[in-house]
Length: 486
Figure 1: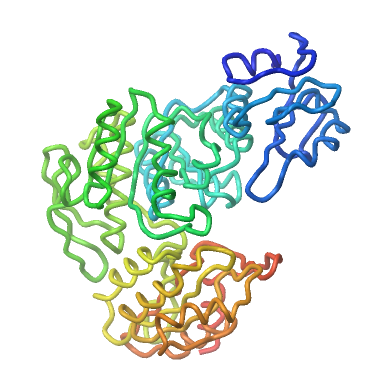
Figure 2: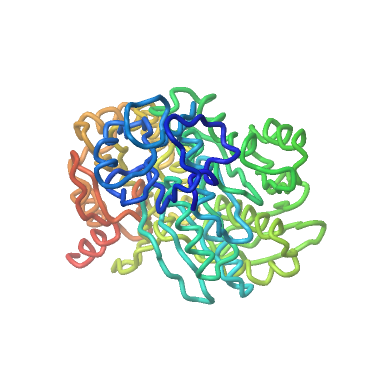
């Protein structure tokens, strides 16, 4: 594609000789990925300054640069006051093919489940669909689910995102739900996406290590609604959260169609929720029609996530009548209240991704009605992340669980014992167990009839980050090993 066409309409200035016929073969912000004919995007990131790699990019054959200030080089320089945002728009033009319907899902908790449930519902209605986010990129065709990219950033970098979307289009996928993280929105990674719908799940304590304040964190999420939607977009909002009125007002002023879900909702309303041993009886009023169903997943929060996904399908043109028969066949996301079977006394062991205060409390309160003995909890907190939530999560553990094993999550470059010490200020009677595997084995071996064990924090992850090393570690595998020794 011609460089002149890529930058047409963008708020940029060209320094140097812009040959109108200059052809761009690739657009990237990773100097390792540069090839002959590339446009190299030299961005000051939150961790790495891409401008330090300009010489490497030119040596590998870059024929133009996108950055924020003039340089003395022999190729055209595209100057932008916001090169990250310009990158997102330019790379979107470079990979123009996209699925017909794209929904973005933001909020603190539930993003992955909403996207996966939307993918499942579309597939059950014979629509080839995909989800993009924390657990990777997954395509569903009928009952078969294919992972086409491994887990990584919740919101992909613009280059990877748009190559992925074009790849999905070429694979005949027309319906996509993708997770819109606060980091991704704040760093303009999603600015080149044309969203047909956007959903907001909830807003709770998280990521203050990056955003510094809850207001900044909230405003980062609001970029999805303030900046990235068209006046024809539909928004799906949780009517039961404190922020609902604020978000609804923003959306009304912009003329979006609004679909509400929750107990206070106008459109997808929860009337009754009655948990039983293996299922949940639910009464709903959906778009004016009443339904009584046996919901297959554990937890009120899963019902909220499912209704949010229903809202996304409504935005894509499906009707409640079309959707409802398939709601009963939803399957939980790996690592979200995932059961590991095999305890000799039938004790339930659940692995969950809960790593925020709100998510941890929701999981423990959801599980409590199924506990005949003690509710046991293994959890920790990640290193090099928001330290203010550690004591809060300790207090939630003390309030909601009976036996607590405070251990290591992904300590990264922090001292693991210091992280545990901060958590223990909130739950001083908990056991302090160095080594996540040791804590899981202790908890499994201590289970008595009627007990339930929740192992929280890592969920689907099959690794642990200690220092700067990423080692294989899967909570579910450790549980199975521990069960094998009983």
